[in-house]
Amino acid sequence: MADTYVDAGSLSERLELLELQQTAEQTWEWVPIRRIWAKVEQTTKTNLFSKVGVGARDAAVVIRRQSLTLHQALRWKGQHLFLTSITNRDRMYLDVQAALVDPVLCRANTDEEEPGAAFPGILTEKYAKWEQPEPYSINRLTYVLVTSKVIQLQRGGLVEVDGVNYEVQVAHTLDPYKNEYEIVRTEDL
Image (cartoon, rainbow, N blue to C red; front, side):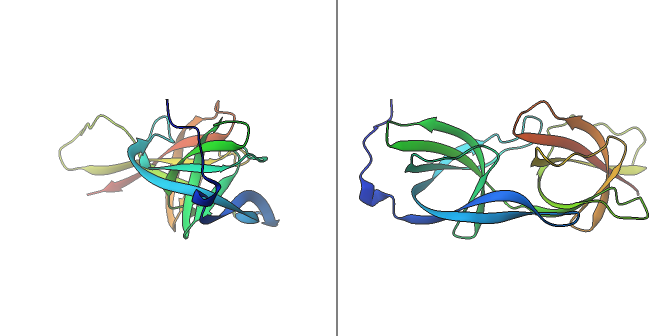
């Protein structure tokens, strides 16, 4: 069992607590709601923040007990921390596990005349078995787009990720804190 004692002076890192908010019509952004002091350590583990995608670097964060949910995120030294676990260390502190990720700008329903909502997402590679139906005929790129729960994409629709259009093929929406979408782009070779 990990040592539960926390020296208050070890909470020396200044973090921003972020919340996804609608900042304009059809625009969602991570907005800082307050600053908090924390102890942050990058671990050697991989944080499996996605059930169907490749993980990211892991960070272990210790903060004073406060209102915090997996719907929120943290920013540490300019790095986005996607929260994956919050547990009580003791009566005064919380242990938080987070994936160090780089959010990307996304836009839903890019095939319609009126563009859909703009929102931040997290793009990761998909665990997949490689198959090639015809030698060197097509290049099929498959990724996983992880979004906050409020972002709803339609299977069969298009989503723009960093200026590139992808088709949403599979939607994994049962997690109470996030949605995961398998997105595909096919190119002729």
